[in-house]
Length: 327
Ligand code: ADP
Ligand code: MG
Image 1: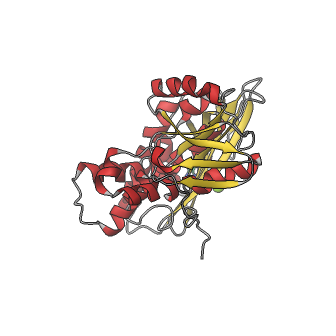
Image 2: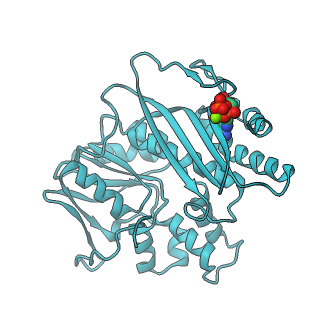
């Protein structure tokens, strides 16, 4: 069904990959996993009004639906190859409106897919409240995937990029906070919300170096908590070390910027652990890759994540990050 829309997607997402033996158009795609590689697969769904604001542009939705999935591959140290796309679209006002949505969506999706040579190989198109599921497939050498388990007491905790920008961008969209569109700091934060950059090169560079890794989607405290639980360790974070963008620090006070960085969702940065002796080398490599990496704390025996405030005292564990299922 929806052949015309599917054709529009197909036309806009052509990628020549030898390992795609049969792409969009048949009952199933036929794909060849390169010899000697493991397949890493992940799927994530974005629902309008839950995972992106209602007035998000189709191109931003297309970008983000792919970005959040590529971020999962990045967190595993995998290199991306293929995607499936399940689109649930509301009944459009007109055929033109449906085409405009699909064209915009495909443009944003492809803008991110193209530089990573990711091929869209199939999907499904149905009617209903706007929701987008993307499944991604990537390759990783056997045994080399980055896991959440593996962090050891004494390891350093690092994050790529900066934290808190996306949550701050969402706050600005929702409340305005007196900052007009066109303010470059506001635009930067909203861009970080709508167009997260999956840290694929960083993830691959961390193979055989990071002892554990995940991507920060629900907020640093929540996600680092998952890494600690899987590794059977605890973590101590220094809030003064949290990497925060000039835009975030320019528009919010220090406590506000800290809370976004600790608990705000949607960052899609990598949080990882490395033996202390390898920190400098890893930081130099990730600086070369453009995203950089900041040491924010260390792994300790025990469990849970503790955060030291700027005054050196432990912060109350009040906010544990965005949780879709919180009351
Ligand atoms: P079937 O009923 O056999 O599942 P569909 O009509 O759903 O077939 O899909 C026809 C072809 O178009 C299939 O190859 C499918 O993978 C592809 N397709 C459908 N929807 C999408 C989409 N949103 N994005 C990419 N490919 C799609
Ligand atoms: Mg189908």
